[in-house]
Length: 402
Image (cartoon, rainbow, N blue to C red; front, side, top):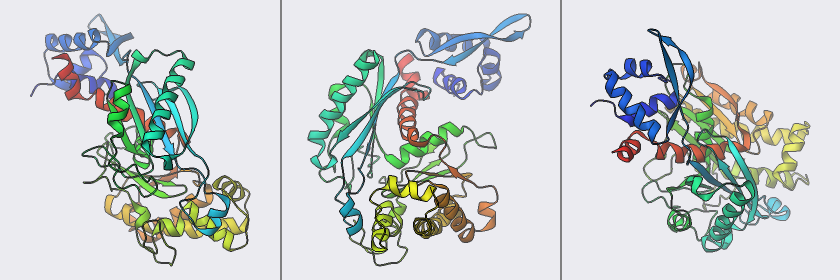
């Protein structure tokens, strides 16, 4: 089938073909057809001509760039708060300080235009939290002087599994009352645009992946991100797309059995999260006599070289690395990125050691293990990319242009 305007847009967005001549060479279409389809994209306000890409045959060659005018994305990343001090030492994973959301406006290229924090209580349920989020979006837009009509999509991330079929939370263990609740529909009732709900590790992985760009081979390479925070999770990007699994459970490394007696929030003993997650680290430090009450304190002590904290981080990293060695052996990714509040050098070094000790050399020969480049912004960028990629997919654009 001949390339439509949507496929030509993908060539322009990726940078593989940004002039008429390059599109001709990439698609094999006639000059007239290429001109018609690019003109349609320009008329729809999806791409615009930019400068002079050089002369070809004595004529100026325009370069085209993806620059839609009405495609800002509202994003919100929901996060559980720090464990309360007493709960951190008792191992109660449900008691915690105030939860938080970070709201932002992101342009189609992943640039954050405005952001604001918002205190929420996820345990209060979606009936309470979602109106607070939506009102927060209104405030954010007003304070930034951005018209709601400029918004082309909304995307939210949550610390729980999301069913890829009905786009609802699937029995989230740390978000009671949110399971199967129609979050997407509730947001769409306020903002009449496409709405996306993503797992936080998946969104973070996609943000980091899109920042990385094409792999060393010029095509998307398998990519793994592990989020090391209060809990543990991984995001997978395969063939340039987030891999969620059949029921949204892909990357749920926190419940892999690594031995031990700690009781996980899922009710089982020996889960990786219960032995090596942030809450587990605080509990173990408390049992050892350390008065570390938050992940922020733990991180500061780790960066200062505290011997007890460093030893606990190395133990946790070894367990995480052992599990990730299996992931690396199965997927043979090009990149393994460590993100989250506990992505400190000691944690990354320990994970690297565990992966190299547990995986076959051929699976790690060209593996890059590194900290997240975007830091805390990765989840926001990833959410925006999900919304933009959906709205401007080849099929969506062809359907819009008729």
